[in-house]
Length: 340
Image (cartoon, rainbow, N blue to C red):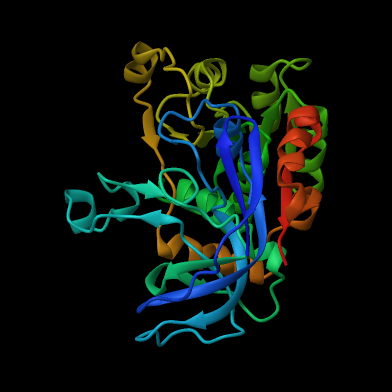
């Protein structure tokens, strides 16, 4: 079978390897679609701090069950599926207290352990999740990032009836906005520097889109949300300026959920956090319940995913997909790899 291997930063080779089989308790997936995400691009640049080379990437994945190992009871060949790409120890404090997604020994397929950038990929049955019959395999490959959004919004008691402010209109920010709307937010405003991304956010049903390069953020917040401003803020960029803006534009009392991955440690005005009794809340990945909720929202037609797919590349052009993202970064949301 074919396998894509990133041998070093900015280099991917396609090689032929032996097709795996399903071991006991495993489901062998014939991979159909792979989404490329921002973390993959960090690896492409050699900037991901915990990913060694060579590495087989691929963690936003859908496919069809090819075979099942002994003891597998929930799946059969022909089922459309996705999977959670977490490898956990099952022994640490988080794992033993229902927080396996922040396992002390957490490994993520495609980063610290092998991913699904190959034609067939074996996954433990307990990490595989069935897709509804009417859901496309392309939508199935986007359940992982939708689950990130579901989990992030689940870090506050509720967004129903709330005014939600989002920094960053990339794929995750867009999905956070869509998910907030699907969960009953009264109004959602998203901020970015890219008119393309902001335009896509509007097409996806987000109420207000603000370009902070040309519009005054504080004025737009008050215009769109009123004097009480946002009830919940989500930072989906991972850079100091947006974290600073999230804190400085918060009224007294609300929560700020940190979704973006920070490459550099930001300086945060903790005096303002203290004075305004702000709640800074972290969020990482997801649990099964988040995947299940994400599938419910997508299957119910409450999410617009097709609009987010900027372009598609065949598996043999895996490296070209990364290069495309580099060249068209400001006009790119989700790039899909078509495997089968």
